[in-house]
Length: 387
Figure 1 (tube, rainbow, N blue to C red):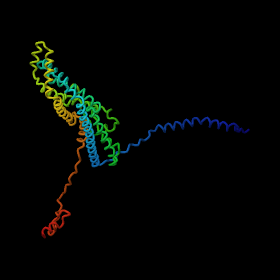
Figure 2: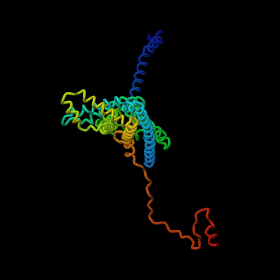
Figure 3: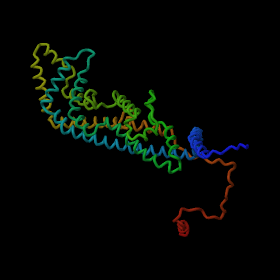
Figure 4: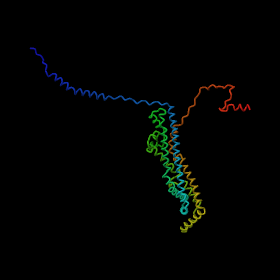
């Protein structure tokens, strides 16, 4: 009896079940392959090499930067000069309104006489001379009555920073079109500016700044090197420059002090001292007031004011000159510091002369050629000869 394997009628279902059961494995395998593909490092494309710029082009760029600095320096110094001219006018006007009338009053002159006598009496060997003490007192009065009110409108100290800011803004305006003018990429031009020094006060290194740094910031006040530059200028002006404070005696106060001493002819105070030794203090004050009153009344108040006005005008002119022209502590000192570093780093570019291997052949003019004459006078010599 032949035995045959009978096909199970459920076999197709088993195959379907098997196929469905293998699907998760298949999806898992595909997921593993996908993750493996993601794990393969992506090939990074290197950045393109910077576009080569000819050295001659960079020389033209540097020349334009120097020209921009010169133009910005002229504009910034012109600004601070005009502001200082206005300051000078206000100081003169305020002196006419307040200081001169105060000084020429009879009561003021009496008080100055008493102070001079007291300075002489209390003067000790090696102490501060009476003229300096009087000058300090007059300086305090001049500051309160003239310099402080004017500084509320125009302060010479603040002009230092204003001048630097004006220079930087103007220079930035000259720098912006340069890359487009020569077809230079912006990033390469910025790297060029970063190599040009503008402020050099290190150490520390934060007190140095490049041209790129000072023009890239919206507010240069946030730059540590800018603050260091302002401090250095003010420190230098503390001892050498004309003082605009109560404590530092200006030429105005010193000249007025000398004028008072000359007018009063009080150089030693010997007679006043001998009187004070006798204990008659009130008599000395009364005598000083009487003598002063006679002197000023004889001279006349108008004469006093005229002499004081001449002294003030000369002293104010000296102050203005020092504030404007001192390259180390004047109102334009910050402008000069930055501009000099930029311009010295980028010297002007001159055309290189052409070298010839041999001299060109000389071209001779025909012997019968008439002499060359300036245009417009042909025939004048001939007319003269005919005559």
